[in-house]
Length: 267
Ligand SMILES: NC(=O)c1ccc[n+]([C@@H]2O[C@H](COP(=O)([O-])OP(=O)(O)OC[C@H]3O[C@@H](n4cnc5c(N)ncnc54)[C@H](O)[C@@H]3O)[C@@H](O)[C@H]2O)c1
Image (tube, rainbow, N blue to C red):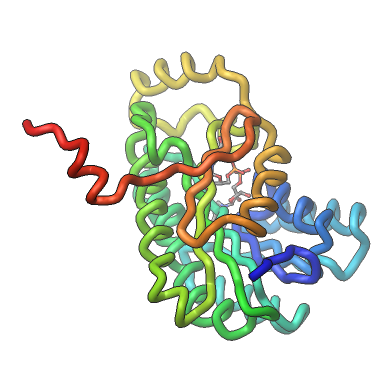
C-alpha cells in the first residue's frame, strides 16, 4: 500500500511557528490538498496563515486557535477541517514546550495534549474520515526523551512517554481495526523560537549545563520537515525516527524482550 502526501489533508498542532509551521509548508510543497494550522497563539497563527497564503495562495490552509490541553478545542479543529476540506488523513501532534519550572503545564501540553490528539484522531476522525485506505498520526518526541537529558529531566520524561504511546498505539491489532499508522519523530536540537528561552529550567545549576550544550550547531526546522515527508510516506507503523545534525533520519530501534534476554547483565 502506498501513502502519498499529494491530495491529502493534514491537521498540525502548534503550527504557528517553528517546526509545526515548517511541516505545513513542506507538506504543501508536496501537493497536500489542505492543512489546518492550530495553535494556542492566535497572533502568530494568523501570521503563519498569511505566510502560507502568500506562498501557496488562498484556500490551502485554515487557522483554528486551539489549546491542546483542551480536548473540546481540538475537536472543533477536526470538525473545521472536515467542513473546509472534506477529509482528514494526517495528524501531526507537534505542540510542545520546554519549561521544567512550570512542569505541570509542560506535562499537560506535551503529554496530555498529544494523548488528546491521538484519542480524537485515532479513534474517531482519521479512522472514519480518511480518503484512502490509510491515515497517519505523527507524534513529536525528542532526542531528549531517549538520551540522558540532565538539563531538563521532566521535559525528557514527557518525550519518553511519547515513545511509549506511539509504540503501543501502533500495535498491529489497533492497525487492523483503524488502518491508522502511528509513528514519531525524535528531533535533536533545532533552531526554533521556544528554545531561545533562558528561564525554563529547574535551577541555575541546570542553566549552567544548558549553556555549555548551547555551543552545538542547531539544525534548521526545514531540514526536519524535509525528512518528515519521507517518513510519512514510507515509515512503517510504530517506527521512531531520529533527526539530528541535519543528517538523514534513522530509525531508533527498541530491542525485543528476546534480544534483551540474550544480552542481559545480572546485577
Ligand atoms: N526545537 C528543538 O530543539 C526541539 C527538539 C526536539 C523536539 N522538539 C519538539 O518539537 C515541537 C515543536 O517545537 P518547536 O521547537 O518548533 O517550538 P516552537 O515554540 O516554535 O513551536 C511550538 C508551538 O506550540 C505552540 N503551543 C504551546 N502551547 C500550546 C498549547 N497548549 N496548545 C497548542 N499549541 C501550543 C506554541 O504557541 C508554538 O507555536 C515540540 O513538541 C518540541 O518539544 C523541539
